[in-house]
Length: 262
Image 1 (cartoon, rainbow, N blue to C red):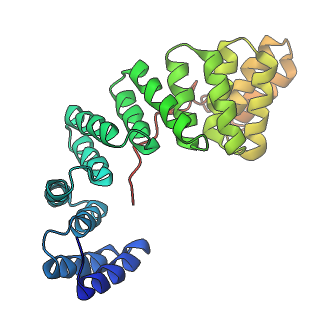
Image 2 (cartoon, rainbow, N blue to C red):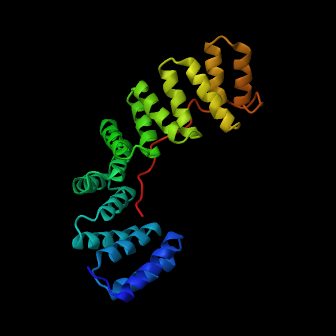
């Protein structure tokens, strides 16, 4: 659709505001552009995306549907519509929408990552793994896909596969403490004690206040019969306060949320 000069100028001003997160001002200008150019799928999408950022999901949903009426293959509208369904308690509809998006745009890694995250939330781990693997094939530099693939492998009891995925995550982001905790857990599952020790030591180098890492170092040093070092780690895990209970056995970690397109 050819856009009028006025509508284009309004769109460009609004987009500049959107990119610096001035969403209320951007919304007003996107609406002005849409009044100038009714039915333009780019503009209906932009209005919907801005409403989405403002948390106005009901109204955003209407605009994404309008976008798809004019452009049924608009991938970002489908992704955002699926996110609205997921956030408003309609996970089955969210997944159905993303599967349709994957048929329309099969090489889009974000679609597969979002499917993996949503299947993971439903505890359908085998499907989650398939989509995280596909997302990583399409985008080998995806930190989110690599990390979440590792978590899914751990939950499936596939610790050695998890190690490979998490090592890849750490190649992409060597200081990712969440990935290091998950890797330590995978090493423990495989009884790779020395590797686990190295991993938790790396965590406390990055974050000296990571008390869970000291706790697991204590457990591992106990297994290695290094009793004095184990006691020292346990004390650190308690913040040097012997009356304070130890931290949880594993810090709570779940899948990353689905990604939102621009």
